Length: 476
Image (cartoon, rainbow, N blue to C red; front, side, top):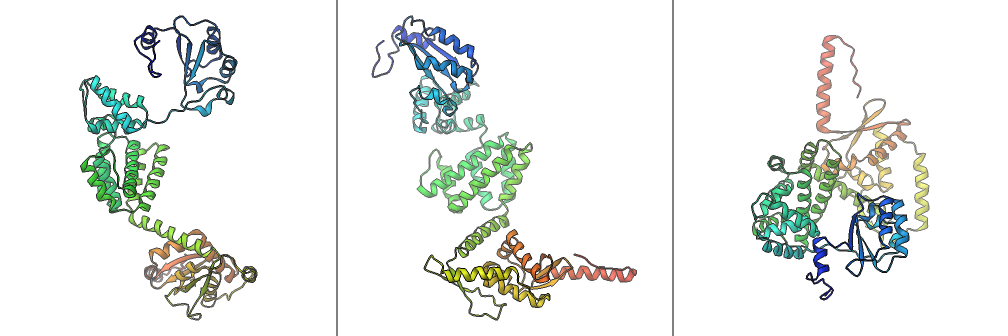
């Protein structure tokens, strides 16, 4: 009855009764288990009674979003015209599930997450009053794990002393929750960045043998990557001891921000795959092996670069100038000149449209040595420079009635392979060759080394067939 700056005095009869739970004027109801119309009708009958000791009769309905539609409708009339001596407190973590008719009749107070610093300060007070010896690192870990909820922080703290030992350190907290040590997480991430699959799998096996949860391990990898990204951007680190900070500084020198962002997305995708899998360990280990595949990482970077180049060329603000129009075997790329004006002249647009119509009905010579230079020239004239430059110096020959082989005398680079194996590029080349041949044809890429191996295999088979007097014909 004597509030101090809005806070209860905790000394009078009403305050002591509220703390002990003996005050009948405060009624708390769990809507998760009492969500029927009948439960709300009981409240509607009780609100007519005056409070016994306190000034108001207070009804606290927890998890109010769990009430049924009928229960909400039954409560609505009371909320519209409540007695002067009655107060309702509706608590929920999902306000979006409440009907608009209920929300419009309430004063809404949104509680925000508590900062880690405030949680740590409160935990220090609780530990002091409860005679619990907790290290700074342990309290920091509890604050991070609670994700802004003081109730969760106190629950974790309580679980840490259930074994009767009032001494809590950071390792004890992580063992209790199932989180691997930060040093192990850092070593695992470092092995991924170095594409060391053996070291990465060794770290995974060591962590799994300790009984750690796969989902928790993935969460730690993502959080560690995020902290690396924050450190690169701001130079600040929180909740890490000196040894862990030194590890983060060393790892941050080996990876770029773009690579970190890409790694976070890949780890998140791996988490989604594990979520719906019954073989979580196998999917996780396969995902780690894939992240340690350097060639796949290079191909992903190449695909991004190719996509950027193609988008730039498709913008319509690029014109092509070739200093050597007759020699298609040159290895130098054509010069690219950027049109400073964003607009394309109407005459150029109409010419392009006319050219597209002509190309759609164009017929080439049906001999590969004649139609392939024409196709190369068509690619160049239509502005498909990425395709053109990666096909320069190639030759074609018909492997059978349905397949044309494109030979690469100097072999294929990783960049060229990534470009040419894109489905839309294969489709583009196949369409042009099909038009030239007058029938639908498929494309097959052949490097010089593959051609030699293929010829030696064919010769061996042919010799065997000749010796055995067997009719022999090779079909690819």
